[in-house]
Length: 574
Image (cartoon, rainbow, N blue to C red):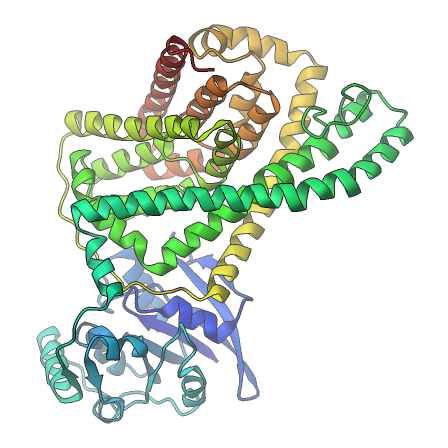
């Protein structure tokens, strides 16, 4: 049996999905699209059923790619669980009535039931079930309330049997139902609800945003550094180093194969930072330098996503986005870019014009560092002091604003107003956060570790074939002159095209001072995106706009790096 979870965006479908399926899930894109959905399995009533979290939609009459996919997926389901936000019954019931007009069994999950009493909302689920003609189960996915009753109702699910209606007839019917089943009483705001209001007001909102981001950076560094100090460094020094020493002795302590696999010894010993062997520096960069910060960053990002704060940040930033020529929704791809630039570029499809998509994609590729790169920046640059970290992020923010204003000035067109639904603040369940964290870490390890090992292998081959010296001489006027970096940094900058976090880790191996690390981080963040992002840019923008975007990347990266190097040198910052 195939069970579809369908409902409006931000009604708690993902949390309910997690309650039903546990942790063994598969994320996929709908064939021929970039719209994602999640698939899992439910074991109940002696059978195993497939459960699919369908993209959120307001109607089965598609007005967007996500709604088109939802409409097509609806036709494939055996049973539909219609997830309804109990605190906003009137808006949600339009989709419910559409579902009941089709010949598919439906069970209504009246979700966020725990919030109704806080908001002074009294709903009669029994009368609502009678009027709709299908089971209506009050649920609170966060706490697990009603999940068992929902599962028990699935075998008895039946089609609603409602006659087809026009749009106006449905809204009229929704109004009649809400009047009969719902009563609203006056209630004073809770502090949680006051915080929701404060989060989107300009003065208090920017203050809250600053506090949230500062706390996020602190937590990321604290968790990342703790994992390095108490988990990964002890593992490599106590357990892995003796293995490499024995293997080194087996290989004779030197030679080409030894230098590639183990690396060159420093003062007669294997150094995980400087040896540059595939099995020494390669594994150390992957697991002891990158993974700890990736883990802490994704944990914090998941908390911000599931708590309901990110949509409020979008509302807060709407006016700023208009100043750089973008619809307020463009903050969503921008925020996604903080996780990974690839889905961020794909998410620009929600913007209405080619002009907006070009500006948003270019700004993401140039000025928005992905999660893995940010994790490394926080670890390496942050290790030099918070002031250096502030310079890196301040420069990227300034580039994002200035470049956006320039593009807005010289590209024809405008940007519409923002229409976005804001979910209530929720305390996300740790099980869902850890599930999402586990999936993201698994994806990172599958993608990044091969790139890290390949990058270290490339470095060794460059040294062995003397190609490194040739590359260094070709770009020396830019790297050593304008940017003020050592010639060795060219390898890291080139490898950034394959994987930014790997390149940042390699910069960390060069023992750069604070100024060099700041300049290198900014140039690496602003120059060519990773190859996956570059390919997606090509597909989304076309070759002509890709070349324009690439030219902007190169000019902006060199200009920002050169200005930053000159300014820091003049101020005597090293």
